[in-house]
Length: 192
Image 1 (cartoon, rainbow, N blue to C red):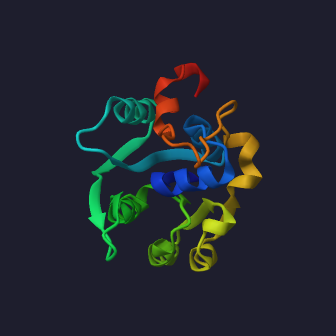
Image 2: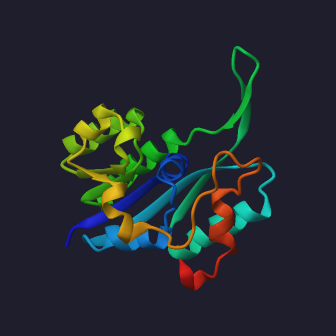
Image 3: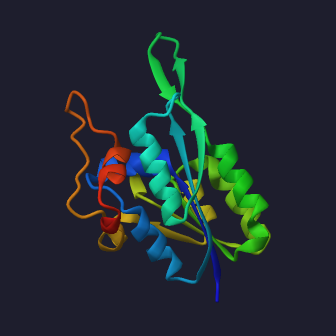
């Protein structure tokens, strides 16, 4: 049976969910991709505020409980040339490190991101005889990444299998949108 490893770029998947207007059930994502073989490992990469707030802690704890290995980086404030401040943290290096260090333990890497920065690591995995599946939405997936992968899965095509029913992401027009992790951490574990 094919050995599968799952790598989820949390920020990219959240941005895709916002565009789609619906959120993902992370347990269903595990189940969907695990059904295609034997799940070796599932990694989830996310930025966290420092100090980590209770909602984020519950979200990362819930992911760990589901079986994910959660990798975090602290959010930091960055100013652009106009002085506008944004909060960000890059986890690309962590994703690539795990892809390469664990490659002897999987046959297929499933990478949930559309970030074109992963084109070369995907090519490196394929050169090692690994199969790579990229999943995201077309409008957020770089053409180079999509072409580098063996298979591309559009989230829209698997909505029924991975959607978190009854939960819609807040409108971007709301003054204070509820963080995406709040609902996962606050919900009943049996609903995940």
